[in-house]
Length: 113
Image (cartoon, rainbow, N blue to C red):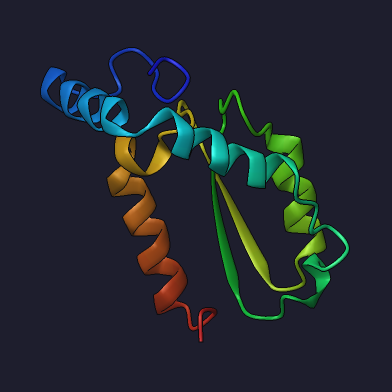
């Protein structure tokens, strides 16, 4: 949980709910998903993505450093990158308001279609 959220980012109720959800996932399913992610390199094909893309990324993910996301942003021809301060890997849950506002702005700008 500490890899996903900074201390104080969630209420006690939110923390308990997320922890319970995380505990409910089977270890095998998590390891299978990690195996796919770790074993897949799509970097040669990233430039083929032409649709507008919004990249939301935490500034403190222990799994994907900001420079990796910045490189992805550079390789995507039609992308916007928003790095959210004081967030970790659980960004959409801990910073739902910021993420939804960024998405709404992206959609309203016409960049998404």
